[in-house]
Length: 305
Image (cartoon, rainbow, N blue to C red; front, top):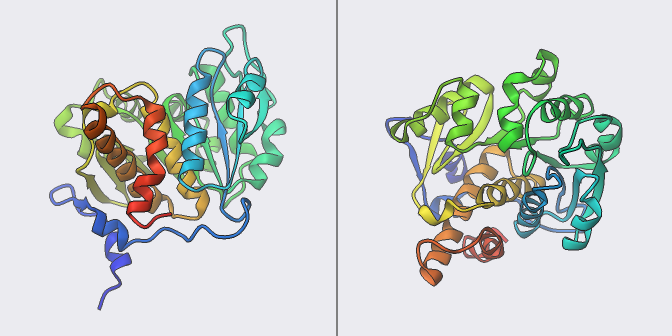
């Protein structure tokens, strides 16, 4: 008889996507979170700016809520101390910034090499302001990234991929998880926009062309397979919600889940947390940090704690 975990890990086709249900996730159990904080997964989040530090806070908190044991946040030097006070459960690393308070990417390889060497998973993107500094930041990260460390790219970091030099892009090959919204997905595919009816197909194309696991909206694509998350509603379209998703995702990867498993689980748990909040507050009006607080409850209901 086929192992149910193997079946769950096999995505459907664009014509017949595999629907993600609670039963499917229970048949595809996450790694048991045992041991010290180091054994449970060390996560590095690189993001934030002087105007958007909250994105890195949301992502880092979500990673811990999903079971990662140790968190470090590397962010613009102008807000690193304040971020450490706002999120006392993390370590912080200050990064050079420009006059806008945006991370420049300068000396990042040297500044992050030790922390990246310790990390079980790295997230780059939440709260970065984009532009040349983000491209340089990614290139610097690529220089010191160990071969076995998965990388999650979100927001400005995901859309910077097409601007990377060949060597840097190849360094990320085969280990990427991307969490774009539809506007960012269009940028990755070099099209003007992605129609609502084509999000599934566009997600599959991005996964194939970029050799990555991709989650966008209610769709997850990897290795030609496609999963559909049927939970969630419009209330998830709130400021910071995407940062929570990318943080939840990197937290599960840090725990030892495969990138595909972590992405399917995180996309479902994030959406299901929104459903819980919608039942409590209404379909709209709940906040991203409230989604974060709900993550471990949903995770527990699925046997993922």
